[in-house]
Amino acid sequence: MPITGPLPIALLVALAVLLFFLALWRRYGARDLVEARLADYGQVADPASTGPARRSGLKNRLGDAIRRLTWAEGLAESLRQADVPYTAVEFVLIMLALGAAGFLLGYARAGLLPAIALGIAGLYGPVLYLRNRGHKRRNTVADQLPDVLTLLVGALRSGYGLSQALSVVSEQAPQPSRDEYVRVLQAVELGLPLQQAMTDMGDRLQSDDIDLFVSVVNIQFELGGNLAQTLDTIADTIRERIRLQREIRTQTAQQQLSGYVLVALPVFLAVGLTMMNPGFMAPLFEPGLSRYMLIGMVILEVMGFLIMRKILDLRV
Image 1: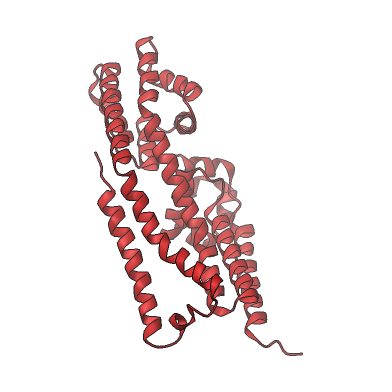
Image 2 (image 1 turned 135 degrees about the vertical axis):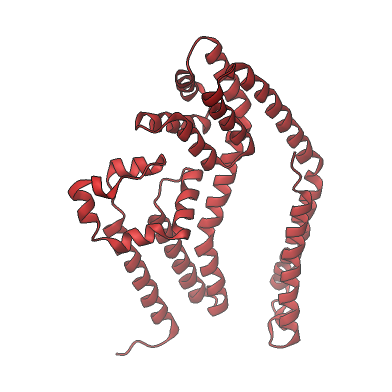
């Protein structure tokens, strides 16, 4: 019996894509533990010095090419920033699985257009979650920086060196800052210079306050000076900056809420009218001018929301 119809074909395509990426993950996802740890901390093993394991890995040129793609590197960096314990290949596999599941569920229940919408939502949902988690984690580390600097200054004034003071911070700092400084110390234990380990932390967190802290430490290594006093001054400056940022968020909270309400109101209104009168919104989806009006309304809603967010994005 021949396979016809869009649903069986969609099932076969989704299954083929999942099997393809599962095969890639099983073939190229496994990495040498030492090489993986060195890559996490900014060092890449020399291909000529890794012995038979690396020579056998040269056969996996496709896997190496995938990992060298620009989007794969950005995804791997986002996973590290958000502290999500998945590789880029595994995360792409999850995205495809959720996208295929959303498409099939939507097609089975509502039709082709809702299936496409659910498939796109399932495909990009993990990306939005990853960005949101990474943003929150970076903000949390930046907010904890004044307390971390105070702890570091106390350790330096007690007579510890910088490495020993960072060890104290890695034991007593709150999460998620503790994980970052543990990672710095592990990088140093693997042979990475402390300046480079600190610079990698700044690149990973992408925070102006962290960059200022890292720059001060690197300058102190080059020129010397009273690091404890400098860090104490920076802690006071960052603490005041955080206070001003929180005050700005408090003053603009009403405007932000108004923006969310204005964006969500048409959606809830359309859903409510459809539930009360299923045929009331149907003319908007018919071919012709009404459909273009609907698309234009959605575009204007998104543009207005982005403009409002840009206006309220005040930085100190």
